[in-house]
Length: 156
Image (cartoon, rainbow, N blue to C red; front, side):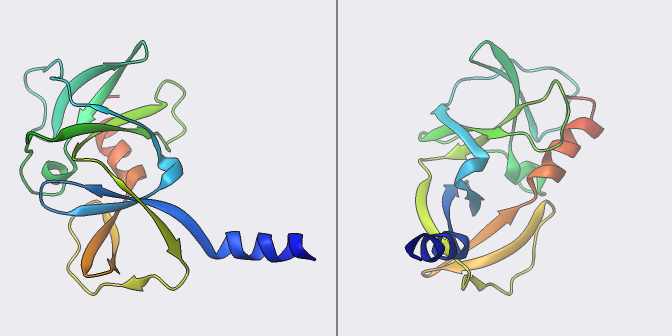
C-alpha cells in the first residue's frame, strides 16, 4: 500500500529547473538538461541567423549553440555569468542528440506540483506557456520547436 502512495505522489510533482536568461526565466523539466558547462566562445559561421551563436565542443561532439532570446524576437546577450545548458534533443534525429542553449547564471532546482499557477501573459515565439513561481513569471519553452528551427535553417 505504501508503494501505491509513493507512485501517486511522484506523479503529482516533478523536478524542474528555473533557467535564467537575459530577459526571462525558463522552466524546464530536470531531465531535459544533460549538463551545465562554462560558457566558451563558439566557432562562428558567417551568414547564419542571429539566434545561432555557432558551434561549441562538448564531449567529443560539436553542438549548435543558440540564444533563446534572439530566437524569440529579442537580442542575444553574453553576460559575465554566462553558461551553456546542454539540452537533450527531442526530435528523434539520429545524428542530433543534444543542442546547446546560452543561459545567464546557474539554474535552480524546483519541485513542480500539479497546482502550478498559470500566468496570463503574452507569449513570445517558442514559448508554450507561462506560470507563476513565487513572485516570478517563468516561461515554458517549446524545445521541439527550437530544435526544428535549427533543422529548418539547415544547421543540424
